Length: 110
Image (cartoon, rainbow, N blue to C red; front, side, top):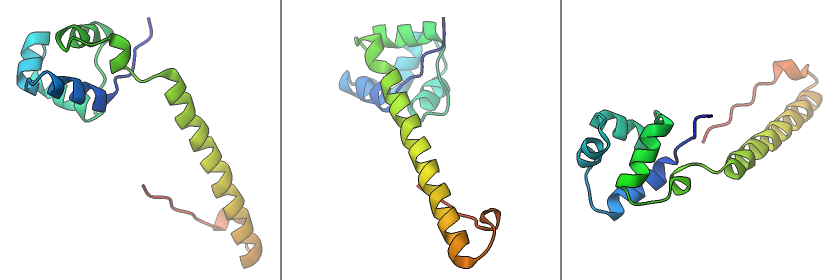
C-alpha cells in the first residue's frame, strides 16, 4: 500500500472542530505530540495506520484528511506550466540582452 499524503490544514481544522488540543489528539492516537505538530505544519506525513487512527479519533472520513491525487496532479501541472513560462522568459531576456540563455538567472519567490 502506498503512503497517503495528509492535508495539514484539514487535519488541523478537524482537530479544532471537535475542540481538542494537539496533546490530547496525540494521546488518543498513541503518538508523541511533536508528530501532530509536524503533521499540521506539513513537516512530516503519518504512516497509513496512524492516519487511520487520526480519522477515527477526529470522527472524520479518511479521504477527507488526505490530499486528493487530482489536487496533486493540478499542482504538478501548474508547476510544469510555470517552468515553461520561466524558460520562455529566460530565452526572451537572453535574446534582448544578446547573451546565452544559460547566463540569465530568474528567481521566483512565493
